[in-house]
Amino acid sequence: MTAEIIYGKQLASDLREEMKLEVDALKKAEITPKLTVVLIGDDPASHSYVRGKEKASAEVGVESNVLRMKEETTETQLLEVIDELNNDVSVNGILVQLPLPGHINEQVIIEAISPEKDVDGFHPINIGRMVAGKDTFYPCTPYGIITMLKSKNVKIEGKQAVIVGRSNIVGKPVGQLLLNENATVTYCHSRTEDMRKHTLEADILIVAVGKQHFLTADDIKPGAVVIDVGVNRMENGKLTGDVEFDTAKEKADLITPVPGGVGPMTITMLLHNTIKAAKKHNGYLGK
Ligand code: NAP
Image (tube, rainbow, N blue to C red; front, side, top):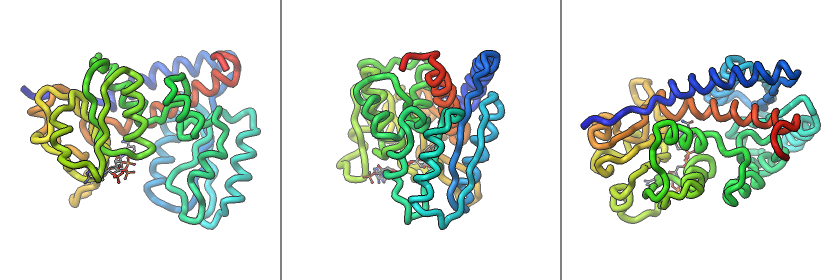
């Protein structure tokens, strides 16, 4: 049987419609959620991601501005800018586009952003809150994945979830969010022995490695839910995932495509977090 495809692009569009209504209502109360993105250097991929964030913000009525800074910006200069943004009451969300130039310590920058404006959900305080099972700003890609699973009424509780990849931005937090939903979670990574033994047990298989067609149907349990986070550019210039979609879809029950799967959900959850920050800062949600 061929799997049902989870079109993240469609879900993201539906969620943005709802967010637009929410932002319209906030604007009537004279609250305009505002996101400030800090972009350092000339990396074309980063510039493209930031343009996507600006466009999506405009679509739902979130005000966004981008501070474009030179590649030579020092860590001290960047910390000064973050300090100003932390103290600017008109700014609800701060996002420093990663990766940063090598001479700037990313962790220092992540930790300098106020946890209450950390709409990327990378600050250790927000990660700690997530691990403790508390409501907070969850990292956008993992949160988008959970939202996709819930949109399809995928049963998470009691299920075996296997995460391939353990990065701080995707693998680790998505496993934590699945654990919070009462899944049994296994992480696989580059040192895992006999990885297929694990992936074949997965009811929910999340793949975030960054290697084209890293897993195939042979790695997938019949009836599994497969979420492909990978984004890889093929020789012909097109994008593809970490999972060999054409074979995997014949084995899985539900599967995400690349492109049009997880990617559009990531920006959508960034908007969600920015709106949530604006509501919190204006006393609409508990402190
Ligand atoms: P990352 O930081 O490079 O992490 C890759 C992970 O894969 C690491 O944990 C690594 O293990 C593991 N890995 C590498 N080779 C492996 C192997 N042979 N066997 C098992 N595990 C292996 O990557 P990331 O930032 O998580 O991103 C992963 C992919 O998702 C990339 O393609 C990225 O572009 C994409 N992505 C997409 C979105 C989106 O919104 N769609 C968002 C973020 C990332 P070790 O830890 O042992 O090295």
